[in-house]
Amino acid sequence: MTSEPTVRLESVRRVYHAGGPDEVRALDGVSLTIAPGEYLSVEGPSGSGKTTLLNLLGLLDVPTEGRMLWRGTPVERLGERDRTRLRRTGIGFIFQRFYLLPTLTALENVALPLLAGGLPARERETRARMLLAQVGLADRERSFPHQLSGGEEQRVAIARALANGPQLLLADEPTGELDSTRAGQVLDLLEAAHRDTGAAVVVVTHNPTVASRADRHLVMRDGRVVSDTAGR
Image 1 (cartoon, one colour):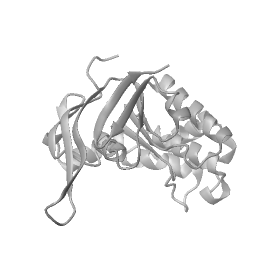
Image 2 (cartoon, rainbow, N blue to C red):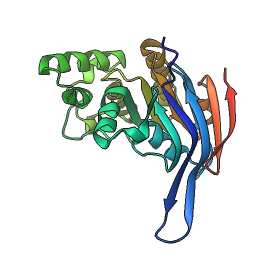
Image 3 (cartoon, helix red, strand yellow):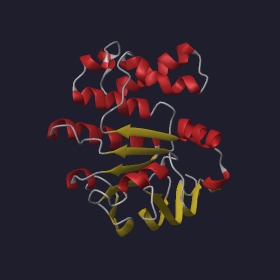
């Protein structure tokens, strides 16, 4: 395993202006290092900066001040095309609302990220089928999202996030709309993906039970990391 951090933030601020002189410091001097293979949870009240942090880690946004390095490369040196490429090849996203395309089957949704990588159709289908089998949905590959339960949709979303073998897996409230049984199943899948792929995992959550599954816990308040502790 390489010693190069997956992501490093150095005194990062993200400031938004709401159409006037007032500014909102969504992140206010955050320094953070995420090593390969780490499993982090991020907790905090609404407005604490969790989502902004996740957007920066996912290269969906860039800092206003400070430095952010992706595997040693300063993000400010990357153009939008390079950031897009890294998002496609190095980062997997799991969202609370799944964002599956309703006109595509489960198999097609999982295979979609592979299209940008230029894999032949047969290889895309083979990998997508393998990933669906890993999340226990081998018998649902031809089903459309409206034919799946919420837990099944979330499992398809996890398989899709793993399609390109990401080095960083980001999950935003991944169990927020699931009952406790299905939430536990999703968390088991996240842990299995973390263990099997060696990807770093960052889970944003309001749920202490979800956070307790991580190896490292961050707590945010007012755009700052106020606690960074080892977990289980």
